Image (tube, rainbow over the protein chains, first blue to last red):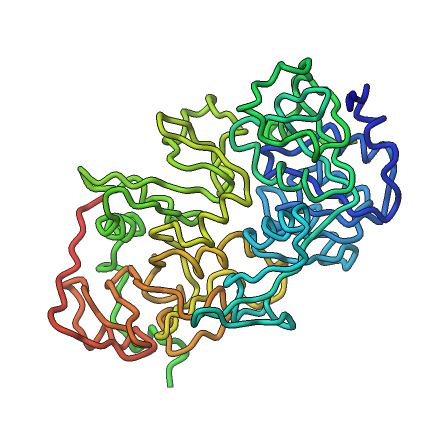
Length: 235
Length: 235
């Protein structure tokens, strides 16, 4: 078994119009820039994107939105240092937004990957984000029922990968990447280095390869924060 | 009738505590070994004012526990950031983890203290701090998760709005972040606990009288025992 794909372009080439795509990252850390840019080049549109944020500047997710490929965004915090691309699209009514509390977003994704269709959380009880959702009392505290979240594809960023798709991450770039890997029908991981089997100590594997469909090596990957500081624009 | 509340109130600008002093006061209550999450912005200052001999462990919801100080300009590693997307550093004891684990720490009640800002706090502990309800782009982040599940939820805030209206109110008019969640409020004039559905005044700056403080507060301030002087160092 070898899940290695030669290029980011080839890795994203099967993503169809209308797909639901989870994109890892928190702000710029852990954002799979090369995979997102390959998705822009590929041209898929009417996408539903799940990400913690809504892009920053004119690269990565912001560029995907700027190219009008995103129909709906599910996120917790659509603000950034330069959120103009999303903000303008949203205020113009060009993009649908579902706001989800950050921990609920993470757990909905984890539940999707773990085959748990719904769960209860105290988060958002009594707020407008709980409107229309069933609630229940457990041990004298109120909880809101939340549904799982799954995707057709996940685009994630890893540090090391092996041909089976076992992954490690780098520092706080881990964030949503491991849970999104679990929740997609097909997960595409870009890794700074693909090592032979045995090149990752089994004790250090964070995402076991069973959750990963494809791996593509992107040596010296772009970092969104650095691109924005250089005022980069894609394409 | 006056146009704004401040027309009839004393001028507090010369006597109120600075944001740094409010953060300093909040830091004095954090116990040695406490696990603490600091909200984005002014609550982040609390980390600078930990008393000698008390070592809190700070959690940032994007997946880092026990991080170090900000790096020097030019030495940032943008894969190592906090929830405010600011660069942080690692130190002996730092741990990285993914988002579902991070919010398991929050939702599971493992955090001792969450410290956040506020638009309004009601006497029953309801908190409004995520939406001004005026349209624009909504963004909630992790606030709803933190306020429902941390053991203590402390708010740092000016006592009144820029227009002079009370921020401590009988009931919130803005969209709620959480219901009945706030346990203590550190303001620019006082320290107030929320107990049994009412505000209990614990400390006030010596330069303001109880009656003037009450006039700047939108619900009754109860006194149970001694009200201590709120005195902070010049910072």
